[in-house]
Length: 84
Image (cartoon, rainbow, N blue to C red; front, side):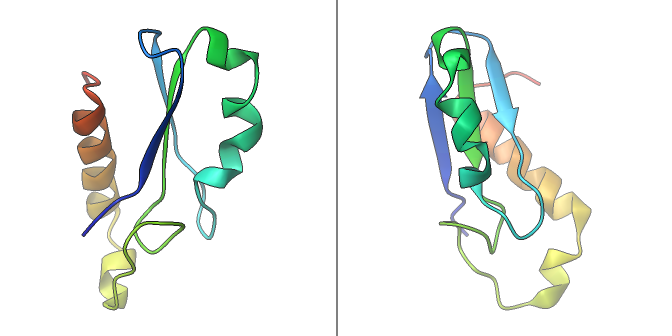
């Protein structure tokens, strides 16, 4: 499964990971990533499974599993090199 993630702002700044709500996408954070925050912070946005540009899964049980969503967040943070 592919999770769509985006990076904005200052590459060497402190990282902020933005997590959107249900039925939304990374576009929920467009005002924040296009604001003066970009001068100081490295900002990471991503789309949950089934949302935005991420893969759509046909098994509804995978949308009711909080651990799977946490695994996605960990994968995004790992890919971005953010230490937990």
